[in-house]
Length: 66
Image (cartoon, rainbow, N blue to C red; front, side, top):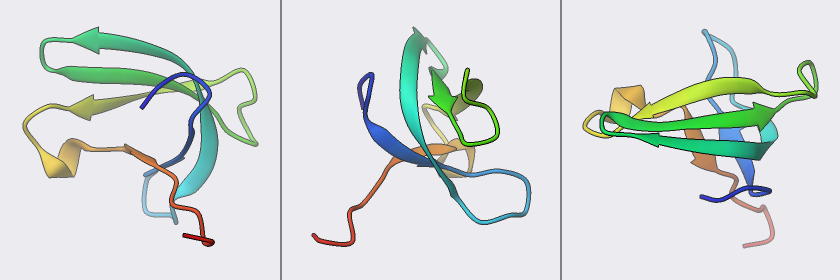
């Protein structure tokens, strides 16, 4: 994923939420994504762990037209 990509994010217990990637920071353990959401237009950070599917919070948005 890259800056300006449309994504969905996993949050506590609710449905996935759509947003846009504003910034990306890579670390040894995974990648941090600053994602703009409707409630957080300035962005909120989400971390995707490298070695854990359970630790994947940000995924590319799949268009319903595909």
